[in-house]
Image 1 (cartoon, rainbow, N blue to C red):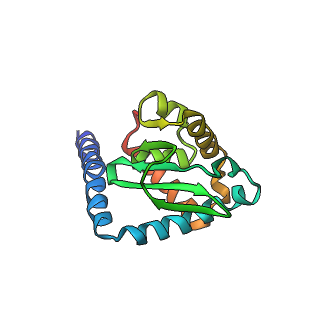
Image 2: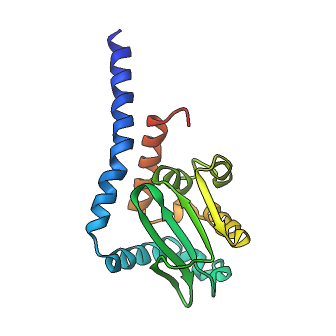
Length: 169
């Protein structure tokens, strides 16, 4: 009986964390200047996608802009490629991909397929759907092992935690 109570309490705590964490993140992000967010995201994406940039796998993004909306934390930006990956404030992208943080973490960790999320309406693609499908395929091609070790470990641990907190999803 005590074990059942502990498990129920843990599940309730997990639901509360999943409910309040995005609200806290949203508030925190709101106080960070837009320009600083863009610079940090730009540096991170250039590190994460360095291999794809070198092998010209991102050429399909030349002269195109992909909007990224992380709905639950209110983060919106655009990504394009010139000589390198560029990030800018959200304006009018050619295609927009929208999802919440948990789904993006699970995709990054290879624990969830973007197609599944798309059909569950947890990943939305609006605009140039052909470009959106190329971006989705790019997401699938990113090897977690190629990420910097701290990023890889962080994503793996967050994905494990999400699977524990939401075993039914």
